Length: 234
Image 1: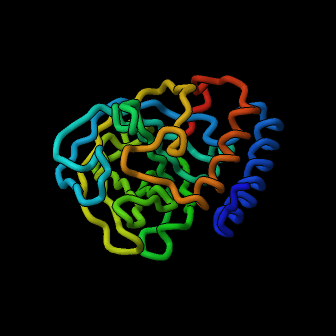
Image 2: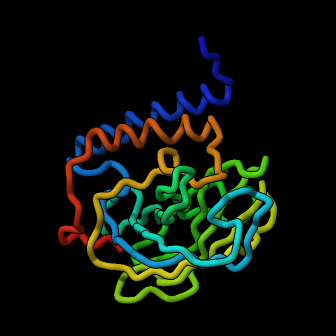
């Protein structure tokens, strides 16, 4: 019989509660429970300050690689209400098996203690986003951050973001940047850093237990709405 750590069990219990909430939301709204409407983007990641000691293949050497992005307001609240800003990043051929790998970012605080706290933003407001919950690389806890480097245009998100990382609650260190061309259209693709991890980046058991049940529930009740359908969410 497999024994699970107390942290893993705590994450799983919390994840089940989030899964129930996500399922109810999706059924009532007859839409995706999480991140229901967004904008698709295509672009490239440019690594200027590699971090080879962490063992994350995508960030181990300088260079560029194609990426896809999706921006959304996480809870899908009515237009005009504040919401949690979200950005999904998919890096080409960055997974352990050579497939694409994902990172998910959300609007959070900036300091060592509040970078793990979600922050609401008003419509048309764009700001810094982090991966919220740390992952493990090179034996260290790692969090990533995206910071806008350009202004939004015609209601679409910024086209350039700086990418940084922090070890534990330490200072942010530069990694590179992403440049994105955004579209009004959305995508039905699912972004998930647990099923599509970056090579060299490992999710902590408590984080996996917290996140994955909610993702599964949201996918199970989702009704396909692959475009914005007139509901501009920026």
